[in-house]
Image (cartoon, rainbow, N blue to C red; front, side, top):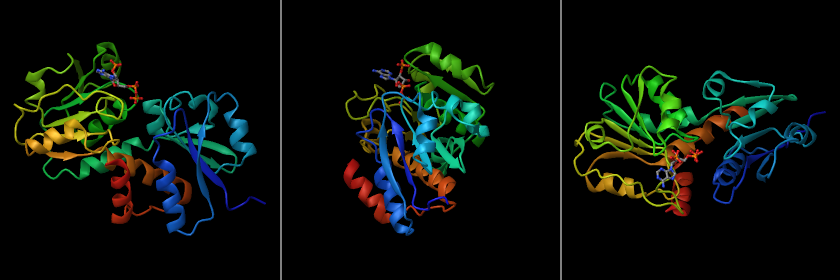
Length: 272
Ligand code: ATR
């Protein structure tokens, strides 16, 4: 018989900074589930399918550097994961390993928090790494028709842009575009603990410009501080982080967990 109290976890390397165990174990306790969520920091994932089955894991989150590499080890992947060629959630459905991408749901949750979002204005996405395409795809789904993507290494931006007629790759931080954007999204690692700040000035942007930083550690990046200084509406990376976690939990347990003030308070205290 299949055990009920199964283990879940996060697969990646490194995982030192990951907040996922704290959040999922909080929800597991809140909903009186007999599960446990732990870290699987692996150097290699060649035998991952055997490992998931042998341990009868209920599910996994997948993070850097395995979001793409995991795909060939899975039995099925959903439409979004296929489109983005990236999986951040695995559900072990009676031995069938299903891959999902909940980063889009996560990003959209944060976007919904913006009160006066003008989809008719251009959006500018900074960065073209692992997280950028889920952001671009989310903006495309939301109905943005004019999306600029800018990256230090331009060809990576071009690789994403060529998949969408609404997206154009442009020179790294071009102020003519930044100052006329309705929405600025940071998907680079800049601003994260251990990285320098994003070298962008919000000095001349329009007052109606919205700023969304998907970096959540720290919560108060230089970009967010600048947005506040200029009285711009902003969203921190906590929304996307919690949104993707909430959607993963729903896939595993068929419960949409609450984003309680207590949980948010706890996370804010840790992340500062
Ligand atoms: P992730 O999976 O977290 O997105 P990644 O794929 O390595 O990580 O992407 C990191 C992003 O931050 C990239 O867009 C990267 O730009 P490059 O493609 O030019 O490397 C960007 N980034 C990291 N350090 C940067 C820096 N010092 N200046 C500008 N961009 C930087």
